[in-house]
Length: 483
Picture 1: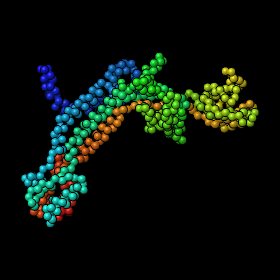
Picture 2: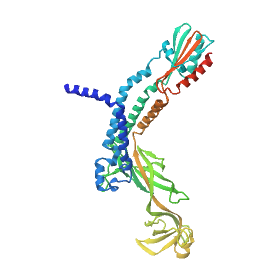
Picture 3: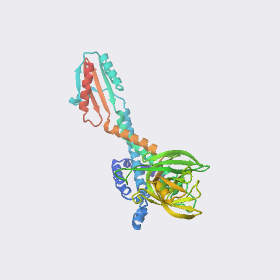
Picture 4: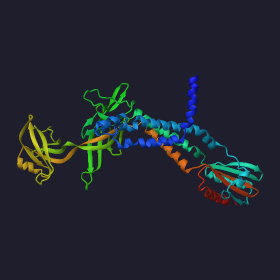
């Protein structure tokens, strides 16, 4: 019991110090300075980047110990965020009751001695030809149109005060900012616990069932492949559920890239026709573009990159010469791979592509294969001169090339951010709280009527700049309605 009293006493002594603004400033400066490694040094949460391969071994060992390559998940960064959270909670708890009472305080009539103490340029007066009831009705109705509630304090039969206020909740705006910032931190914690980020490259026309992870929460529910050849950072596409692993595959059905005409090597746009395959069926399909992600089962897929593969793709038609082209087969070739034809008893291998063969345009060098052996000599087929093959080779078939293009892989980022709705809510609260703190202040207004004379003044709890002019404009408008 004695020990608990000591702990309670220590907390009572520490709590007010923890709410100090000085601690807030120190923590902010430290967060700013210690965020530099996360900007300057390579981080593990970036796809296709390994800090161990970027720096020498001694620096890498030292940086790994200090968690410089995972700066925003490091013990020192998380510790500062925790300290800042405790500082915000302490500040709010200590200051909240007084600010809430100030916002909820009941309006009172302005004492007569306070009228005399008001600055001359904050006091306005004029005579009215209307009686007390008419003035009272005019002012109250005018305030109701502005959704302002007025309080009337009767002093005598022909004397009263009308009191109203604006922006009283601005007194607790900083509490809203503090609470919203804590909500943002809570969203980040949820994402760190249950979210993940990763990436994969998919060759056009092919599918994958796993991806490489570079940030993973303990509750993400992802499953590692048990194959001994699998990489340590590899994870299946799917979630671990009570009845087993719910897996799916991603297929890049088609990839298209468009280049600028004046800059042939610079991409203007690139997109992937993506299919999600589960139990052998396409359960979702869509076009993936930069800044246009696709979602499936809490997985979000982003188009991030692309690259050329080591082969090209050829669309062509194989035609029979004997029946003048009546026997026709549409085919897609990949350079270096033998393609077994369905309507002809042989295979064809396109093993070389020329962009411009002797000034005659694009051409493909083919080789015929039968029984896994080359038959005859390799021959060129010109894309722009389809008759060239018929006239020079005089074979039983001819090939017409319709299109030649590079084969690409599409680079996807894959992630899940369950805390996003939480810190979006916190960000909105911070925006509202900051707006109130900067642009709205608590103002009170007092209008007194006595024997045909009207006096008007006001008070403001902070930022008095410009309040004198505001009072003057409001007094002019009220005078015009009550004279």
